[in-house]
Amino acid sequence: MNVIETSGLGKRYGRTWALKDAALAIPASYVVALVGPNGAGKTTLLHMSVGLTTPTTGRITVVGSETAGSPAALDQIAFVAQDAPLYKNLSTADMLHLTRNLNRRWDQQRAEARLKELNIPLDRKVGRLSGGQQAQLALTLALARRPSHVIADLERVADYLIVLSRGQVQVAGEVEELMAVHSMLTGPAAAADDVTERLAVVHARRAGTVAHLLVRNGPDPAPPGWEASPVSLEELVLAYLREPGATALPGPRPRATQDSGIRA
Image (cartoon, rainbow, N blue to C red; front, side, top):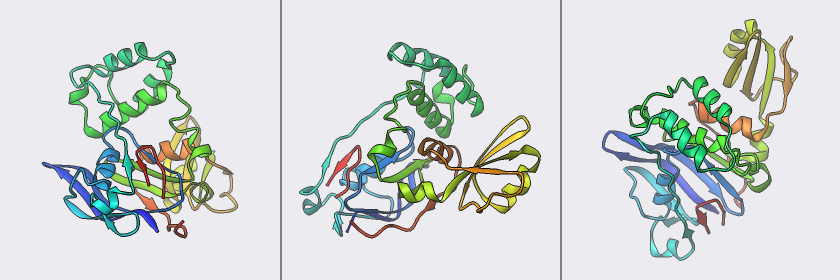
């Protein structure tokens, strides 16, 4: 039995798609981590799962084949929502300052470095950032607090992962299988373009003469001159949050699921 199953699921507000073309089959008896920055579509997906929001396109069923929001479905589901808005009249720098003062642990250097990498200006008001930039700012604020439960502890808690970003499913599947089919290649930056053309590269990062490529279904052994190493769950999640291009692994044999918002 699948606890949540969707096909072509989407929700549009005006011209903006909060969630688009989502295809998921979340099996029962898994602890499911639904990960993504603010604005990624997580709340929209959960709201549609309990009937609080009506889909614009596609369909969604829960706990087997029950219609989301129906009395039969709601008898088997509990839902707790959470909201953490950005303040759109503040600048990016002001958001960092505010969040730093509200938290005992804060890594300003990590926050500024990540925003620089993403080309998000510190002096621009949050409301003038693009939707994707706002989502990345929200994720940066969470990571700069260094709360290990944000990503690092997922590997100990969850055995099924869904990453949402830009309103779309970026990756979904069993954690063990996702980790098994991804690897990190480290090698000469001068040869990175050739490797990128031949492999499914999720995210590429270059540091001087060295390139780090997170690849899916990478070769074994690694290409000549390159070293392959396992990826951490944090590397995997952050890579898919940075890059578009979804890949949903085949669902495991059906086995109620638990995540931060739904209990079945």
